[in-house]
Length: 504
View 1 (cartoon, rainbow, N blue to C red):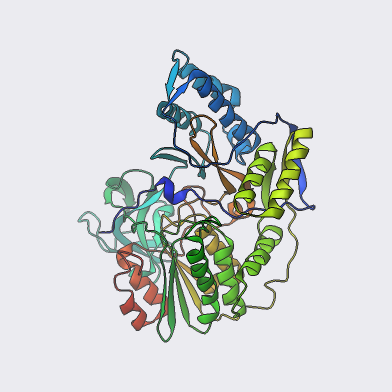
View 2 (cartoon, helix red, strand yellow):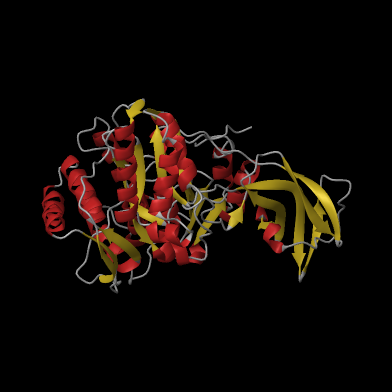
């Protein structure tokens, strides 16, 4: 049985790629705001007890961040949120206390915000407590399989005496998940749910209701960065569970850069293979340009010595020609951007952001802009890769791992890219993400300054917490069989015989 993955603060606190601001952006909304100091998180020790004044200052800081910086603020308002009501609710909860325990404050913030936010990137952290503001949904499986024949779905396999082979499934087709590892046109009956693993659900067979026990599959254990590749005559297997680039002065930065450079150029190394298996299970996201650069190497059949320049080029393409987004420009955003670029030794980025901070001090505004996409011929020559790209996903494939699927299908074509496994985490609607700390408690707020319109409209996307559906649904026990059905590679099947339990 696979170990169940548990999210930790260390796992998900990362910064996705930054969106550039173009002169061609159109302004959707402008409103005056107050200028207040905002601080990028230094992950300082949490202060356990707050005076009432400190508590009020932290509450004001959070309200300011949400109302002037958070990309989902308009969505919150549509859900009935108002700053005044939220503030009043939190203040009333602690009005009789001269000293406030910061953990109680944390839970009050979570309870006050969660009805209004559906954003997996938006998180609040207090010591080991971490709350992500989305409802995660996993597939709870039955052991009943049906085969489609015209408009009917007849049972081919069942573990329940009440459901027999040949019975007709007469319920909603949203409970059917395409499951080719059990046969052509075969579906497994299941249910996407946020409930506990051991559940039952009524389904209709032959127009009669039958209670069916369901089970969840679990997920492989989250590990530190793991990179590996190997090949057979016809196929290659690549795994990388992390696209996060450490800080410039981090001891891990050099080794991460070596791994990323190797990964990017595997596109050229394995270009002649009939099949490439890209294992993104438990990939915790990071820089979206990294999987894009791998796909570009695959597309062009080129090796790149200067991957930094390549990544910059692809970042420009992504923000100017692919991702349509709404961006918040405000005192909050520019202050955080200046501090972030300073920490990254990005002198140009720091100077740009600091100049914008000065402008905001003169005239403080919250501006919502939308970019206008520019046509690009970057992918106009046709792909040099003629094989199949098989991407493995699970419930913990996050953000940049999800973008990898979107990039691959757009660039290489739906018919050449197969996604196999579970639905992904669902952490991609909001991006341009930073960690910001409250001034007194030092609680960490992980929040987004951009909203990704491109992925929201993608037919594969089913929302925050539900993510991308795979082309082939598959529990771990059938994963190797599913890969083999696509690749036809017996040698690779033998090498992947324990793929259910861990990254290879």
